[in-house]
Structure formats: structure tokens, C-alpha cells
Amino acid sequence: MAPGRVTTGRLLSAFTQIRHYSAPAERSIPAAKQKYVPTSGTYPKGFLAGSAHAGVKASNTKYDDIALVVSETPCPAAAVITRNVFKAAPIVESQKVLEKWNNQNIRGVIVNSGCANAVTGLKGAEDAVTMARTTDACFGESESSGGPASLVMSTGVIGQRLPIDRIEAAIPKAHASLGSTHEHWMRAAQAICTTDTFPKLLSRTFTLPSHPETEYSIAGMTKGAGMIHPNMDAAIAPEAMHAFLRMGVNKSFNSISIDGDTSTNDTVALFANGVAAPSGFEPIKFPGSPTRPESTSPDAAALITVMNDFLTDLAKLVVRDGEGATKFITIRVVSDVSIVVARRVAMSISTSTLLKTAIYGKDANWGRILCAIGYAPGIMENPGQDFRTGKLVQAKGGKIIHVPHKRPPVDINRLSLAFLPADGSEELKLFTRGEPENVDEARAKEILEMEDLEISVKLNDDGGAGESSSEQHELFEAVVWTCDLSHEYVTINGDYRT
Image (cartoon, rainbow, N blue to C red; front, top):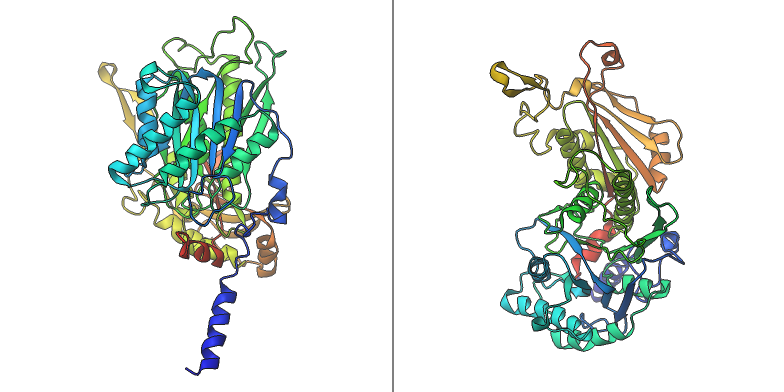
């Protein structure tokens, strides 16, 4: 190739690497994302946040990458963690801390960005312990003193070791910066960002029915732009906190997907110091616990709603900042067979690379939705599988047995697809009870131009006949949030380590 052509080729290559949807070099927040960043907040009493710069990634010469969130009063804590077999060292260390202290007497959490400290061998485990103990020492505590103790989290590149000396030096600076203002919380939220284009921080207030005069606050921060397909469980926690958190996570973080990659580091932690509660207030019991199995108390019901809504809003921010994402997609699947069927179908659609690229290109290629339904795990392998639906009946001798329905989990003749526009206008039908619609491509393009889009999947569409049928079935709805997949995703992840 002639020298001139080589130069032209290199210029073209450089041009195609320009990032349109990733964080700018100076970390300014893109104009389109500013609306998701709060300018004020109301934060829980007795909690403080701080941050500092350690330079975990050599390329980061000035931005804070250490975050510290603590309770002034050591408190109970609960956590749910990734089910990925290769759990990162900070997760293993945090599990040990929670087990050792029986989920009590926890001070807070220290977080670094820039390096996941995952699959880093014995040295990685030692570094996670060092982070925790260095944090504890800032409060005058040591391992032999009996606590309080700190949890550890890390985010960033897998397989690389932490620059632990720089982190040890930065943790006391993060401690010295602790404060309770919105600015303190915002700086901590920014410090845990990696490829994020904006910090994800939420706070809100709520009351409980038994004493509505008392105002409580809940705050949370999250990060994540790629390697997002949470699947968290295996928590170790006090009964009530674990139950509230696990229920909320299943409806929120476990219902989002960016790229189908379940991280080695996913963790959601909950701290509750009770500082705002009035004197003599009895801690809330989760419904169904041994101490209160008979009913759901009004306070428990209210807290479940608050937790579920709050965690869902926090999780949605992750999707809105998917690496290179331009669309926020809600996938709503209704089945009259089981929630397992509905959820497997929704998750399968959310991870379809072909569908996500089609939506990025504003192409109403609905056949890719149908394809993803057909190969959904558990449906493709066993189309007649018993999904534990049907009836529980009492047989002779009093034994309770399960009588499954005889219909398959997915029947193409009862399946309907549609796009629901974000502006509330009429849905665009794509496929109805086994027959393709004559799709208005111009209307489809209008819908796909919008930032938000909903894909509606009905696995139980009988055209209204089922409403008058003698056999009525319970309906199950699964909702999953995902985003499109752009050129930018490849650009970001092609050189993420460097």
C-alpha cells in the first residue's frame, strides 16, 4: 500500500475510535445524562461519605478512586453477592467479616475503582484484608479489639493486582474527608465510577404507618456500565434485613442486563443504624419470620414497597448508563404457565445481541425477539418441562400432590409481540397469535427513535377467548430492563484494560 494510503487508513481508524457515548476524557457528564444526576439529597442520619485519590489505574492521575461510606454508630449489615463461581477477593473477605461478627457491629464499606481484585490469588486475598484493616485502623480499631469491622468492595479490571501501597496511603485521606452533605455523597459516588458517564446516586425519605411523624431516609449509590447481568444470592445476614434485601434485589438488580456477563464482583450491601427511629421502637420483623409468621405488619409492608421501588430506580440508572447505550428497553413478558417461564423468556430477549444491535440501528427486526424466545434456557431444551404450574390437590390419605397443566410453556399460536411507545401512543403490533403483522415500518422507526421503548410479549394471548373460558389461569408477569448495543460498546471494551 502506498504511504499516502497508509496515512489515510490510520486517520480513518482513529476517527472510528472516537467515543460518542462513553465518559469524556475530563469526566464531564454528557448533556443527555445530566437529568439523572441529583443536585441535592436527604441522607440517612448518622452516615458519612468520603473519597480520595489513590491512582489505582496508572492513567488516573487526579480523580478520586477510593470511596468510604460509614455509620457513626456501628450497625447491622446485610449483603447479597454474585453467584459467579470465581468470586473476587473483596467479596470473600466481606463474607468472612459478616460471618465473624454475625452481621452486627459493622462500621461501613471501603471501595476502590480501577481494579476488581478478582482471580488474583493469595496476594489478592491479602490485599482485601489490608484494605479492611486499614479502614478499621482509621477508627482506632484493630482485629484484636473486637470491632467494629469494615466491608470491602472493588470494581474494575479482572486479573490484575491492586497497587495496595497507594490504596493504604489513600484510605486515611478518605477517612479525613468524611462528611454528611450532598457533595460528600456525590464525590463518593463519582469515586466508584469506571466507564460510567455519570455518578449514580439516589436518596429519598419515607415514613412508617405506626409512627408517621418520624421521617426516615434511604440513600444508595451504584456503578456499572459494562459486565452487567447480576445474579446475586447466597447472602449472610440477620433474618429481616436479608429478607428485605433479597426480595428487593430480585425485583431490581437481578432484573437488569447490559451484556449478559455476570461479574465476579457484584455485591449489594444494606446498612441500617436505626438512629432516626423513635425511642422504644421495636425493629421491624419480616413477614413469615419465626417471630411473626401470622401476618404482614403495616410497617413491614411499607418498608417492602420502599425498598423495592428504591432498588429498582437505582438499578435502572445502571441500564441507562450501559456502555455505549442509546436506548432504555423494558421487556414485559406475561405467561399463564409460571413466573419461571416469563422470566426465562424476558432474560433471553434481554441478552440477544442481534436484537440489541437492531434496536440500536432503529430496525424493527422483531423476528429476533421471536428467535430469542424459542431458544430461552429451559424452554428450548425441554419444551414440555413441568414448570411447577397447575394445582395442588389433596389425595387419599391427606397427601398433597401437584397436578401440572398439560399445555406447553410456549405455544406460538398463543404468542403476541408489540412495541409500546414511550409517549403513551398506540402500541405497534408485530406478531399476533402465530401470525406476523403487516408492520408500518415508518411508525416503527418513529418508536425506535425514542430513548425509551417497551417490548410487550404475551405468551397467553387467546384473543379474549380465555376470559370467558371455563378454565381460568393465574397470570405471571416478568419485567427486565436492558439497553441497545452500539459500535461504542466494542470500542470501549476493545481497549478497556489500557
